[in-house]
Length: 574
Image 1 (cartoon, rainbow, N blue to C red):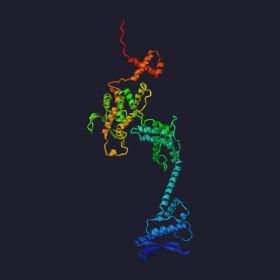
Image 2: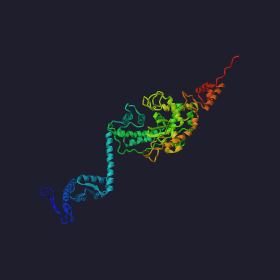
Image 3: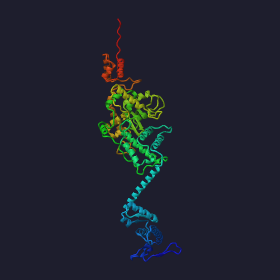
Image 4: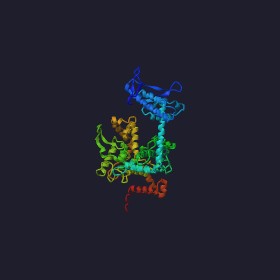
């Protein structure tokens, strides 16, 4: 027991026979009906701690009295099951009180969210101690329900605020396009090739989404937008958009959402439930069947390479050899530097004499090296002899002496290499096979990698192609070891042996001065047949119908036949 100090300060406490301090405080029903009694709280055996608990109990009882009056309970204030639990926890010096769910809440079968709401109200009334529930499952379930409810309220409030703005989705997409222009341009303001592709996608996105207010761009609208592209919408040509186009559109939408969420000038924030989930672009059964009927990756056949080599000009053959020998695409051919080509030098590590290309691929920043075939070395020596003079470091230059990798004045990709390859393909289709496949130049790179994989396996093919992760099961292998290029060198040699028929098709592929076009045996026979029909008196139209040629092609063959005919000896006059 104890009593207040005369000055109203720290109470004077006296321990009982067991050395424990106690205090009687507040009221609760006694055993006799209609009577009340005070509850006795034990404060422990430490005098200082007991005095502190004594004072804190005063605060608990004062809060209990206030709560009683506020709730309109009749009679004098009493301890109930909840307030008494709190007071007992304070008397024991506990830092937290684990409350039982009140009996009235159990009787009314209140849900977990309502119980947690009640707990928060009690905590506001008794801030001197942390309150929680003894039933942890009810507590966790109630907290989850309130978080979800709060999220819905926040999202609803944002939608209400955003609906008051006049900003629209198409305006935001236009601003996003300007952001891409600034992000992908250099200090001179010239847009990179990546930036050009990104900006061209903005009109496509606008064409496939309504110009709604930004306030209406909620989670459901974003899901519909992505799903629209996942289902491959019909294009202006009346066909479903290509899977790659749809995949790129979905990536750009997600990039737009990230940008718009951070852009302070746009009154929009992404929904709290927004997640980037995997999306599969739909592919029809017919398209899958077409894929299954052929190779997964388009590559040139050995016969097609022979045909291309026979009709190619020396510079085009240089492109072919760089692609087939080193797995170079357009970017690799155009960016190859003269100091990355080492002719007639021993290998810097293995000491083997030969011709080499040693470089770092710009796309992956991965080092690669290749042993050059004799034909490739011959092509490079030929080109160095005719290469425009100047201070440019790139190996392949335009006729004006500029690197072929540079963008045009309008900022577009330079088309020197692909245009040259397109002309070669057109030449083959015109002179030998009108059904010859039109494949891009980069299919040569895929042809080379496919051949190396067939010869030496996938890991060697990955090293040959300068892939960033040639060992799929170990992405860190390059951090702890050097790549074994000897296997690449050996595979290159075997790949070159497979191309023996191609090299044999033209005895002198690189000649000084302007190359004379090599005419195949099939074309010579066709030309002779045209000449014979003309000699028989047939019209150009009749010859073209029989040979499957246009009148212009018939004239061309007749002209060439006349030019190639041996000169007739002069007949002396009598």
